[in-house]
Length: 198
Image 1: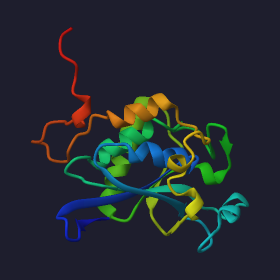
Image 2: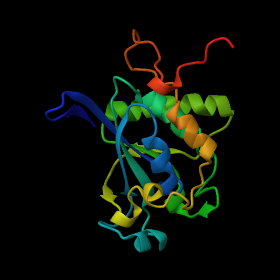
Image 3: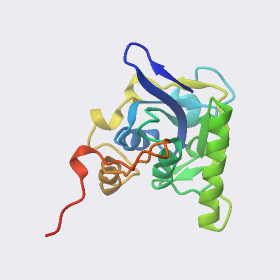
């Protein structure tokens, strides 16, 4: 979905990403330059308003992170490249130590143009891999926000379980983003300018 944040004049786009346990994925994505808001929930299952226990029992939902971002800073293509860095794109129904269809990988979009862009991105990934991926690219049918205990989990519990390494988290902060504007050069966050000659 694309629009403008009311009262702020900031461009806004959103995408829903499933990639294993949503605690770590939410934290990682929230660190990317250009991401303005994240929350976690359950997407594209068989029931409405599932609980965490329902999802674990097989409601068909994927643990998913809703990502809002400024497309003038971070393109969807760049966001997906960052996403691919922290998932196993060929694993079916698991990521890391987490096993079950709620841990499947997926890109869910509300706009047809974003679905097309995601499919092009996935095709490029599969060309690099030399084989098909297990990532599903589908329209978002529904998304239900998870219980408050799961929101910003690693901010509340810094030593909590996370399948994404601290090194990957640090790389997110310094991710080189590319605007959707082809005339706009890549930008780095202010604290990550390349070091000069030593």
